[in-house]
Image 1 (spheres, rainbow over the protein chains, first blue to last red):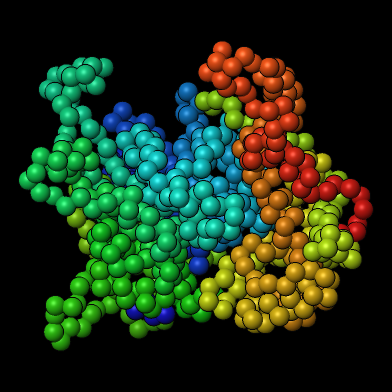
Image 2 (cartoon, rainbow over the protein chains, first blue to last red; image 1 turned 45 degrees about the horizontal axis):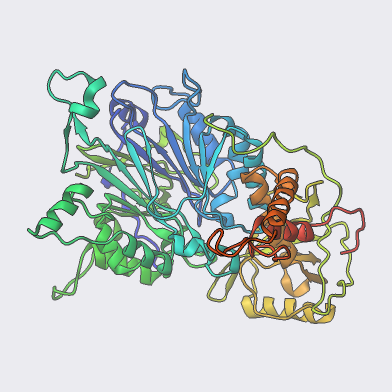
Amino acid sequence: MTAPAPIPADRFEDGQDFLQEVMDKPDALVYFLCNVGDGDAQLLLLPKDEAGNPRQAVVVDAAVTKKLPTLLNKLHETPDVFSLDLGPNGEEPLALIVATHPHQDHINGMQELLQEHGAKVAEFWDPGFFHSVPAYHGMMQEIEKLEHLLYAQPTSGFRRWIGDTEVSVLSPSVHLRNRFDSYGTEINDSSISLRIEFPTHRYLLKQGEDPAHAHEEGEPIDVRTSRSLILGADAQTLSWSYVLTDFPFLRKSDTPTAKAIAAATGDVDLLSGDVLKVSHHASKHGVNLELVERIAPTLTLVSSVAEGGKYNFPHSVAQDLIREALEPSTSKTNFTRGPDYELNMFYTSDTCKENGGEPTTLGSIAIVMNLKEITLWRFCDTSREAVDFTKARKWGKAFR
Amino acid sequence: MRYTQRPAPPKEGTSGPWNPKPTRPDGEPVDAAVAPGDAYVVVDEIIDLDVRLVAAPWPDVDEAGRLRFEETGTELEPEVLLPAIEDVINAQREQLGQVTRPLRVGDTFLVRGDVEKPPEWELVVDVTQAARQASKLAQQRAIAPPTEDRLRAVNRAREEIRGQRAEPVLAGADGGGGGPAEDAPPEPGGVEDRAAQERRSTPGSTASPVI
């Protein structure tokens, strides 16, 4: 593995207020990739709707106890950012929790999260892969108690719309799901990987049109302008091979068929993503070159320890192939690659090279993205510390 | 709340330590017993030669066969690699008359001794089969109502239908068909099969400490 190079302090624009930026951008989706070492704990605050209703949230994995519940409680202190209160009609603020797969480093905090906030959760997904770790029993025990909770085991192609955000399941393929009960699927390949896209307006109101009749009279939008994230869970090569089959690259041409397909799909690559959360902590089994080329992310994020972890994540071969996908070298001579942060590739284990001092932890990552720009924030927390918004550091440039 | 998937919350409380009752290939019970201080150890991940184990105090079991743990488990990072762990486990399997085989994710053991040091484990009992069934049960109880009462009714109705269909039918009256034979075996994978399997495999909740 290659430890990420320390990031110079002057790359950050200090003195910025993270919560204020979130409040100033009601149309933005906010994505947290928490620093939990070799594990995943992710939170998405979905954009506010045009009526200004509170943001809903989606949790994807809870690797450890404390981290996510504390983050949710801290966000709740600024209700204009996010509130844990039920809506006026009983709407749960946590629209969805996804336990991508039942490995300890993805669900160890799930029982606690459900115990603390289960009444605020509308829906829960896991892949349906049963595992004998105690955390799995604890998670199922809490689900069983929550009578109101909708529970599902989605497979590839399933879509759920939460407000103006589309949650698409890329994996596991149903081919893999049907083998779960026979040791036929490796547990990482049972992972639910997701593509999150917003906004997903498909109809535009005509000038002066009554919104109540928009479905009949609005004009369809053939070409979507949207942002998207790919959350790779721990899916490995086999699972991604099914994803590449299920979500084909449709080469555009002038044929009527190609045009029709493009119009129907919004004329986008079904796997494109502005942000990629690399699968399996950048394990050598987690991603492949063609996949990252298809996604073509602007920002690439890795959740892993820097060095000395049990499995030496991130694996060098995975880092190299991601770099190659982001910045092809094969047509260049005398090519020298810069540090990963120059490729907009960030790790929860990143450190900052302060002037004259020891490198400091940059820790959890937040992305604030709307159609205009994407900003990146770091919270300087270790894997055992809570996210503290007062320590937020903003990346010096916004991404388009 | 949109619609109900599950019944009312289960009763809390347990009926004592889990008793998985592992057997040897010849069907005889493994000669070992749960003792205070024993650990529940799961192989959570294997990457190349590195093994991640998750350990927790030995669980209790509730009246419905669900395992109840005091904690969600601790990730162990043994200093020894896969072959050494496999050697320890297979030596114990052999001693207890259990099948020896390569380690795989999901394998579950009762472990006695310093749980962080596999070479110093004093007793290792492979309880993988029962642990997998218990995990499956945890999932099934969490996602759908128990089916015992309804299942009996379904089976009664099915038997009645079978009885009616088994009456002699004049050739040609309905295309020459007829229902399944009265003594037709249950459909593979059907509810009857699954329920029977579950009843057989439901982890024991007896007071016997002998596993």
